[in-house]
Length: 256
Image (spheres, rainbow, N blue to C red):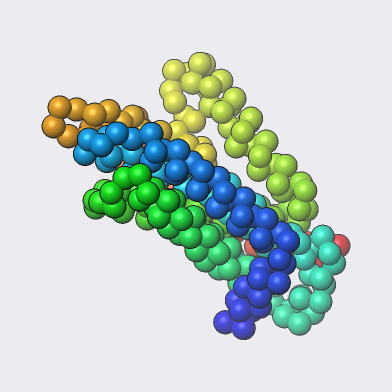
């Protein structure tokens, strides 16, 4: 518990970095939520779709929590304070576990704050009437972003380079994963990209499903080969795999 509190203190006492991430996320989510809500008409079905769009804007939080998770681990390597941390707590696995826990909690809290801001702003244009499915969608946004905080922390612990981990994550999610998925699909006619980390997160947060307004209800069409529970398990598996890889790397490698 002492190590966990120390990690939270490190996040809170890095004002420029933390404040930059928080303000950047809140600005994007606030602007996106306001745009989604202000474009809805007064019909109940349109407002239900608008609420889904407002909540889905928070999916961008996963990018910020991924970066935050990387920073939670790597800023000690970058500034050379990791040596003192390991001297104070020779059992490195406890230090890394505390960083993982702090990344998970900070990612979830940051996403929840962004969601709350988006919902509050949306009520200026549409009435506050969230149904069970929309609350569940919001919960998946928080869960996905929190897991990606651990994912980032595991990547940071494995690479121990702040710039290297951030660049690697962006290259993978923005370039390598889509390109690899399209290449395999073209060769095998099978959409393996849905099982990659980015595809799993998209399924968990359900941002890629189609939404159309029917005559009596709002119909959402799933476009994925597996369900939400499978997506949640796969997301946990990916985060756990990176966490284990990072833990092994941190324990076995010398401190630079």
